Image (cartoon, rainbow, N blue to C red; front, side, top):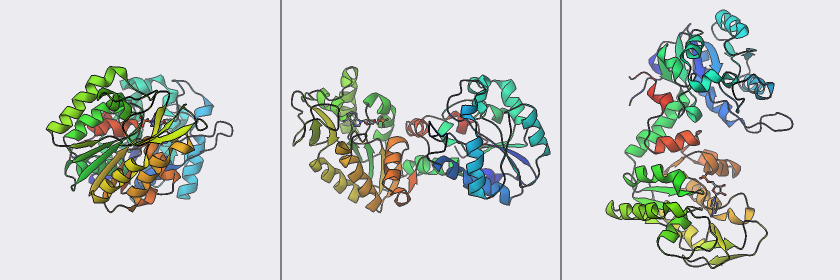
Length: 395
Ligand code: AMP
């Protein structure tokens, strides 16, 4: 699955429609951008297009405006932030496929940037309506998809437009494919994956796919307790998916067959309630006493996992190892993040909460790759073919 990138196509003087993921978090009161990471992630592609004299037409969604024009979800703050980051004018169209978008995109000159309004102002976007996709495509000569965060969705701007234009990836998608794809297909070994988060059911596809690839699988977070219970341990009031017990045992069995070392926490930080204030304790075993719940991995598990990370040559991490919303139970996640930052291994972070934890600790530049996709990176790690990537032209 070798897809063409913007390097494989002549963009000079051409109108290029770039689908970005500008779905940034906004402050509910002021409407200001809280975190501009996704905008920064689009810069390399935009700069390349500028340097190569393209006429750049950007589009993206923001939030869930439910198919209607709603200024609360306008891309105006994104246009302003992007303009600041590039030190260059970014013209925001008042609409997506309306008069203003048509005017701006037909009069655009080389080296200029137009940003269309939020594509989700039209319900046809998420329906992947062919007429809507065709209209968007009519603005440009080339389609570039660089929105990894929405690549798992077959929408008009993430996949549909590729039916009408030569379609290639931008640098962000190229990078995501390299690290989540190629580098995990032929990893330097030992290859260790760390999975956390609340539920086994959310990660089952990823676990099954990884069992064919990894040497060691470390499991923490809430999902560890479904495995505990499946093995007959007491879990007190810990989070558990009763309907996944059989599945948990099947996974443990499969790991054995495939000679993958699958490790669960060997001790736990427990609490009498789901709260930062309740009575907490450490238990040095895989048993949680009645009336308590496991909310983080314990210090022995942290040491064990850190030792394994030290010897690894490739590490993939997805999902927090405890309830990081409570300061008392973020220790496991923090220590693992630190171990990854200190490791010489190729370190790949699969988006979502673990990526946020690393950013918060200021360790982002110590990682080899932090995926910009939450859902998209999980689906990719499950081995699924993402529509926003499948639609691109092969090399
Ligand atoms: P996910 O979105 O699947 O990566 O899960 C992230 C969520 O898992 C976070 O909100 C954590 O609070 C939650 N989580 C992690 N460990 C536990 C635990 N031991 N018990 C309950 N929830 C947990």
